[in-house]
Length: 196
Image (cartoon, rainbow, N blue to C red; front, side, top):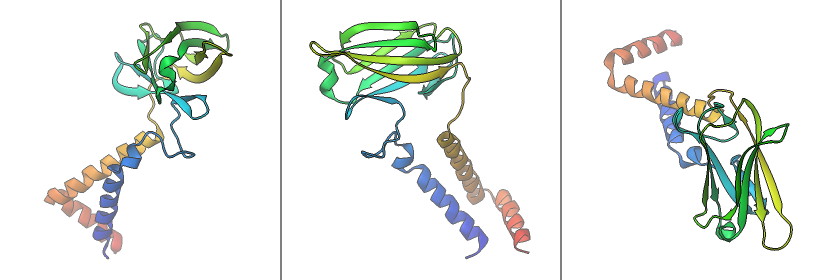
């Protein structure tokens, strides 16, 4: 197999991986779940969390790193099962390590299964924050879980995002190689020199 055939096969494999459902999946099978944006309120009962800064980054979703402070922020919580739709749940955001309350949503039953916390001015300063989700049962003890996030560090691309961009770049070069004779000649010339 010559080098150009090998190059073509590698690029085709990269494109196949890029469009594989598992690359775009948010989590995984039981025991292998890699979704860092969710809370386990009780064993095997989850709430998924996504953060948005719609004015600054309209097409981006965030989790543990929020790019800007003092910027409109929406925190969205989706119940992963029906269990919590009939439970009273309250939400709070605090600045850490001080524990200063930044946002509070009084306990309520959220029948839709989705809760949006809108912070029109975002968080007041860069630093670490905690999201508190508290189950307030009709009887029994309250259950409180926390998830930390950092705000104000600026936008950053995850390693998986960088990998996807790299694959897209290779795919674009491969398409250019296939359909542009001048570019194909340059690449073939470089490969020919490398063989010699």
